[in-house]
Image 1 (cartoon, rainbow, N blue to C red):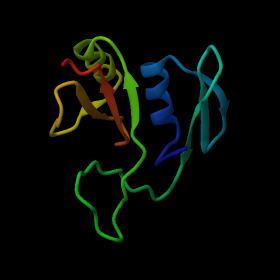
Image 2: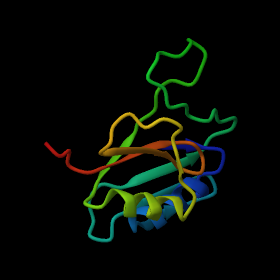
Image 3: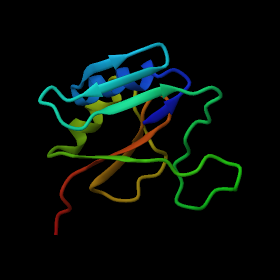
Image 4: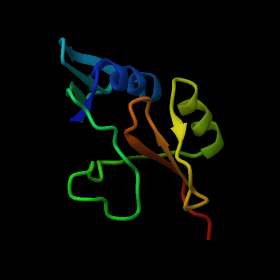
Length: 119
């Protein structure tokens, strides 16, 4: 479950990114499922909602804590980044590894696109 100021925004983004279908939709909750079935993703409206922060250092006690980061494995990293940016993702300011790209959805939730690391 991912919190957002409006559950529809990250759900709409994930539908475009992953090709998911709406399984359940209400005023404050949206659940998505893959067309072939399996594990789904759900989003809920949370007010007030603190924008998630991607950091490699611990944050203060009263600040947003590290959030779940969805990993998506793929074959073509540049094409996948373009596919994610088109519906509203933004790349994180610093990328730590050549075979991984950290991006944020329109609400700020981080996710990673990754290819197999070359040896």
